[in-house]
Length: 250
Ligand code: PGA
Image (tube, rainbow, N blue to C red):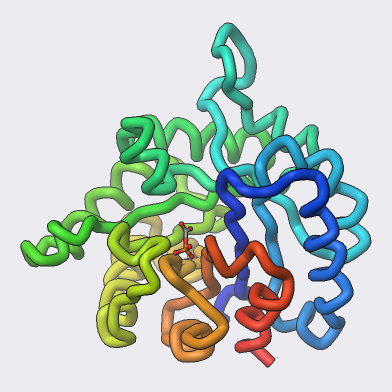
């Protein structure tokens, strides 16, 4: 059994209250036939979670955070815990996005602690991994991803987690790896998960591809073996683009 696909939208630092209309529109486009084929998730800025809760529930769209602290509460000015995100309506949280790893110096150990905190709070972590352009050119993409998977996933096995492969050089650039490269990496990531957790758990972990996914390339990417969905940045901001990506499953 292949896991139920997930199309996740990462709005990053974009969206004011007026953008909630985009979620409502997405709901109108998310027909029952598509609901059966794939789950939809929007990760808006945390400021919009509470406002989005009712609209998203009505539209059968899940909500997520973009980051969380690894502790539940405490003196951490400006941070939010997974528990707080859950309280605000999130059932998922992205951890270890490359913009956090590189812009905020997050190590694999920090990402692992965040993923574990999310699970403890009852929130599904979407753990991001992926090589830089220099690492791919140096021929170490697989080794980098293997290391990140081993060191940033929760220590305890759980098929609830989601892993997103996002080559850093493909994020927001309009450039993607070839289909062969994506297939190779995803097969390798699946293998790594199975070696870590055993195939009963490993085969059920959803493996998303992220990095310049668009309505134009979605079908080819999403139909690849071991690709169980996508993590979408830029193209998730407009309901029509985002739904066009999900419709690859129809
Ligand atoms: P992009 O971003 O789709 O705009 O490339 C993907 C991501 O950063 O998750």
